[in-house]
Image (cartoon, rainbow, N blue to C red):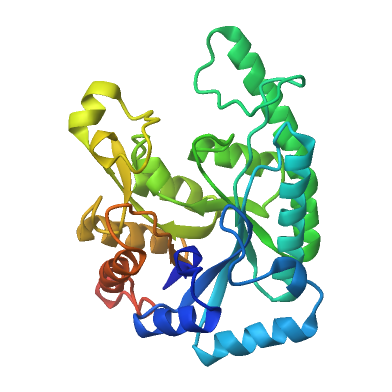
Length: 322
């Protein structure tokens, strides 16, 4: 297991400068945005695709800073009811998968997407309850759309030898572990989780139990290191389904926080230990979205906590059990 960073917060810097900074603070890997919401500040997906020279230049830049790539990221909505929006997201995703294969990067991170509630609707619809019954019908329709799309895309990913790591995210069809497993079982094993605990904390999900649930089924392909703090004076009054703007911090029920500011170091050591128990040894890719601090300070504080949590060696023989 190693500490990585999703480089989006450093998008204003050149890739060499960003990698130099990350190397200096103890980061060993990067997750690179190539489209969708993460953007493509450091890797122009279309320019690099099928370009051996550009790809070799990227490898040399990474090697210069002893950095590996944990995943390519393109978070968008390929199930959107607007055809142009869905087509753009699908193109981004397929090109990201192809580019990952060409770069020998084995994972692409993304969202499941969210369809409309019916074939004639114009906007995505996040269903959170089965009643009134038209909502249950809409949810069934959404899963039909999703399974049809992701079954084909999972086959495409398998042909390319690339895993698809879906971030369980509210306002997407897959937002919690049982839905993640349902999509995986309906498609193939290339579909798994980009396990981001920050979206699970505020839903009341016990993160280490969720890691066991998915990890014991070999369904964790990538991991986002991001924390969340629930502010109970607000959540006790209005709950956690909070549409207050993220920058109106005093009024929100919860906020994304830097590692250690939502849950203490002991919790993060439990997270790392549980990941090891289920066989995950990939990146802990820090995603900075803490509005109470700067990107660099948030990244550095996260690295500081994770550096004490991550094991540097493999387990030895359990001599005491013999």
